[in-house]
Amino acid sequence: MPGLVDADTSADARAAADGYHTIWQVVRALRAHDETLAATLDQQRQHPSPAQAPPEQIVVRLPDAYDVEQYLRHLTVRLVTATTSRWWEGYGAAVRHHGTHGHLHIPIDHITDDGYPLGQWIHLQRKTRRAGRLNPQRVQALDTLGMLWDPRATRWERGAIHAAAFRAHHGHLRVAVDHITGDGYPLGAWIRMQRRAHHAGTLDPAREEALQRLGIEWDPYQAMWDRGISHAAAYRAEYGHLRVPADHTCPDGYRLGQFVIAQRMLRKRGTLSPARIAHLDNLDMMWDKRDHAFINGLAHARAHYDAHDTLSVTTSTRSPDGYRLGAWLQTQRAKLRNGTMPAENLQALDAITTTWR
Image (cartoon, rainbow, N blue to C red; front, top):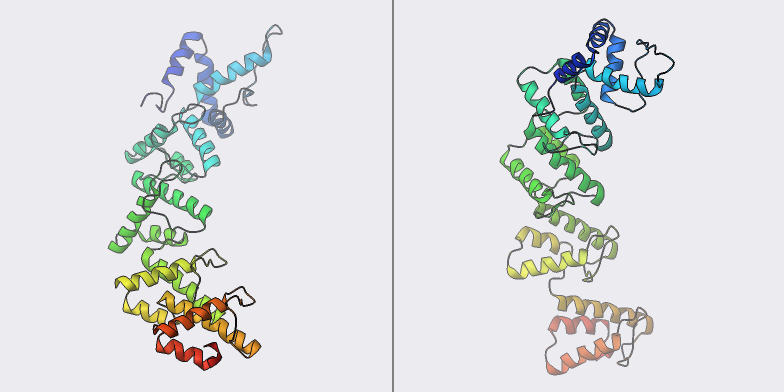
């Protein structure tokens, strides 16, 4: 990997050619015995700045004719380059990336905004550590930035980062299987892979726990049912019935009307399990929308009779909530005349009063 060697051998060659070689040798000897000087030089290599000056331990005396500031800036750059490891340039780029993004999970071809090949540098650190040649202090320095030494773990962490971002934005981790993030990451496929590993018992416990903290649903179909039935139970508790309008949306945004319609369709197809049918029956589920319509009209008829002691109304009569009670009663009379009214419906209306006829 050109440009990412650990020692500045080229700096030695340049110094020997331009007469600075002896100065650099002296500074290297000084830093070998002065930890503060060594740390200052490494920090300057890590965080380069056009306004840098030599460390305070190094005093430079120049004739009056020199442009002191310009010369010191030039000298400092040469000094830091010749007496420190190029490793600190990479580490400085890593620190800046971590400070902005909170992680070092980047592809090998990642280049920073200022042109540094940070992805290659990270790859080189992993390779050097595997070979047992990375200084323990440098390992520790990278560990403080959350360095992941196993590339496979890095790939998993990348998925986890996208999952966390999705959860923060949407409030849940119900990701469509074909969902692609804005930066092109196939998050839906990654979530499906984690579910498969969970069901196979091959998902690392720590990763499983991390995903559970993000609210992953290991069985999305069971989770959809659980959300729907809990909202249905809450509706039944509040209103005393489960005659949910098709467009009804709960306060938290859950579309309960669509859930109820879906259960009717599944039962009609024969794909709704007996246990779920029984659960909905316990909530007084109205399986036939026609029954729903009749019970709705019956409730309005009973309310009108309680208020007026009669159901002798015109076809234009409406209930206080706008329900067309007169038209509904006219429809029931027509069904009675042509013999299409179910006996239980006739009994229910007559139980209120026979004046409806």
